[in-house]
Image (cartoon, rainbow, N blue to C red; front, top):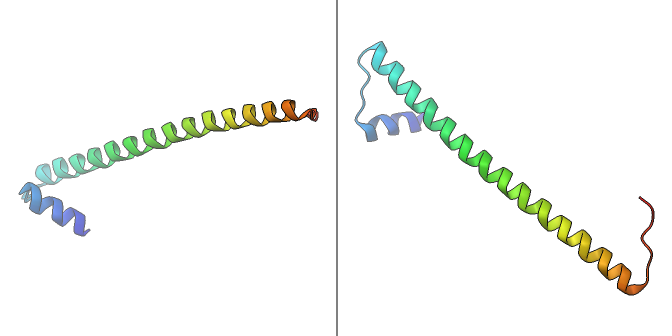
Length: 75
């Protein structure tokens, strides 16, 4: 709630009627959606990076096992 008051103070918005309030709420919701989308994109990117690292780790382990002469167990 303090953030809304802060946003009103920063933007200089002082909704005097229902149209102003509606526009403010829509702008606030759009801002929240944009932040959520950015965070979602960042999380997906990090998950993709982790998947690549796990694949590399599995390959390195398989290579080490091959070099050590250990046969891979059936999965």
